[in-house]
Length: 193
Length: 258
Image (cartoon, rainbow over all chains, first blue to last red; front, side, top):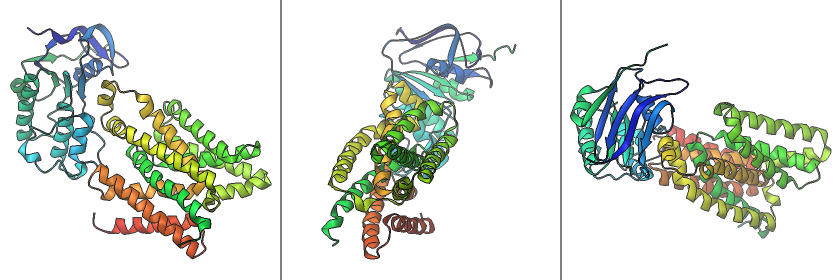
């Protein structure tokens, strides 16, 4: 078995105060782990803590040395009014265009703010998904995607993992997590003091 | 052709007509277009204060704008971004007006700073502006990708471990220095017109970032050359002629189909 790229032992993450229950997790290269749970369970906060944005209140969080982390958040890149084409967006993060779905053919050379919401979201997600990284943290990547987009995303995650990337996905979409992940961890909401 | 007397001022302004719209595109990307007006006013205020202290006004203008740029990062932690540049603008304007009101010579210099003194540019000023333009273009080229990445994917930018200083504070400093140099050459409003209008047009019309930069450059240089010629031909001040030409272009673009 591959050594873990990411290891969490009793991790409690939060912002001003703790926002998760203690979480244990092991994620090896080539693995895909899903995080599910109700709103307020701290799924996004946990990703933020792994990415160094949120605070660690308890436990141990270890990322293997030299690991490059890619993070997709729920915040949409501010593309409105910006003359930026899809191909330029991908070049910014170092993502390739090979493997993009057919419904994005012809979109790469158009301004992103003139694409449909779904097309724009998928390209913005693809820019992170295919950027050089050893550990990918994805927060609700299926938001704004139609059924075809969700299926394609699942396949793209599998291909990325097969290439050696470790992937941690937060999602409310239980069917997507079940189809795309090797394991799913359900976070319970922390006790409110 | 215009007489040789105007060749040096023309070339000096041309350098700025190349640099300012490109800088404006990156300011617009960061939603900081008001910085152009703010730094220009701070530079004007600093130039007048320097004159009061017996120092060369351009030195005071550049120093004041640089100080404002360096103070931006710590101030931004305490002030919302929407308030920072208006407050800087007001501070620069108030200092400039107070100095001008209390010093007979300052009134003339202040007026020249706001109206522009391009026709008085000499060979020394041309050399400074040309060298500054070349250096700033090279720096902007180097900063372009990290500026775009940090704006669109701030977390991804941070996780890559890219040094934030050259991208954030470095760009602020570059913008302030360029705007101070431009203000003490073209005047406050002509500088603002070249930083604001061509990028605004380019952001509306261009199909991608590279074409946006090219369009902004084309509008700026074209507008500048036309305004310089018309101002000379009709014996009018350069700044307002430039502003009117660019406003007309903006109006045509706003009315035409995107």
